[in-house]
Length: 148
Image 1 (tube, one colour):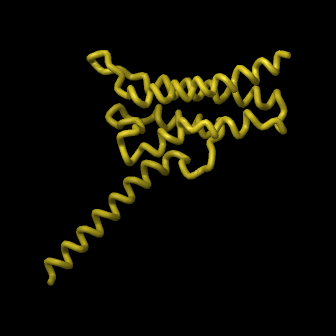
Image 2 (cartoon, rainbow, N blue to C red):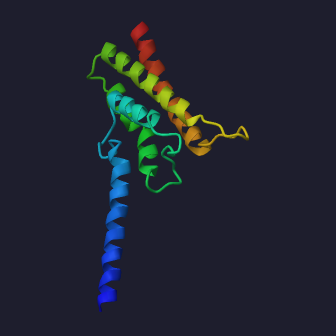
Image 3 (cartoon, rainbow, N blue to C red):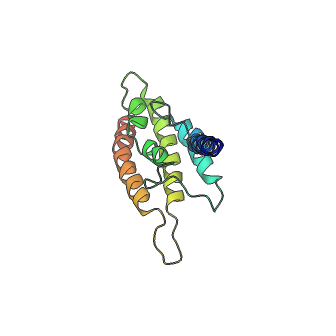
């Protein structure tokens, strides 16, 4: 009976520690927000940039961090502001420039190569670049409207 209770306690402890580790990883990033602002992207970039070399960047293949990379490449993050015609053109232009800079910085972090000259984060880098292409359509549209 005592041995069974000890096993249950260990199982509870293991489950608790697992939940804490998962929460610690995602709590560093604002994944619970419905969309990210340019300031959120800046904070995410700073967090990713400050990670130790031994620590892996968020990946699709890692169940503990895939929510973060999926949130980074969510178009709704920029669409909610940049496609809002109620907001002024100058404001949207300024915000789009900030998004542009922060997204490029995040892409640079994911562009790491290993000793075989292969991308360490190939899948994530491809998705980030695809996301960036979609962003650029909106970015250049706003820039062109601002010039006209």
